[in-house]
Length: 188
Image 1: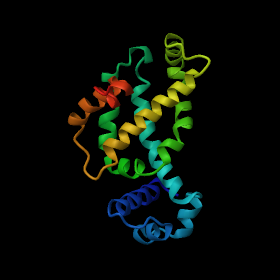
Image 2: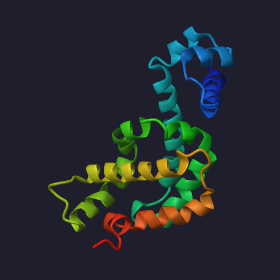
Image 3: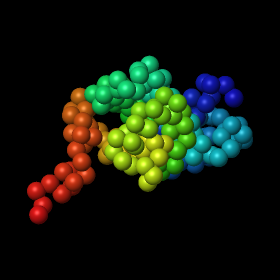
Image 4: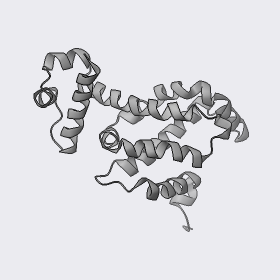
């Protein structure tokens, strides 16, 4: 299948999702004018594989930019300046992604993509915070990815998400707050 046809299938999936329509292979085939057999042959796991393809393309774009930095120099400010605009540019895709369970299912495999880059940093964090032997550095990275995914769901999983410039301040606040301060603030 050509990349143009794959793109047409993914765009059709996004259009149907934006309309809150029923996502089926039949409907995608009908609207994209691509035979159902072609779609099934190229997306053997159906809609889930289409959404996964979409998710991984966004993650790869993010990772491409993140990997240009030394992880020891990666501040939350730099991280947000890289990640938030990319997610904003893909907000239509993100609405599909973050209203599915897929991001949580892919936390472990995605961690493997950046593991060589972030391993030393997360190993240091485990030691500094005394998390070993309870948590490994890879598990801490997976926890971080899960926290990010949860925050991005809050932002982009709504019908009309706030602009990236507005959300960035909320993102930095949430990421810099402990659960205790965020949830139990001023509760005796």
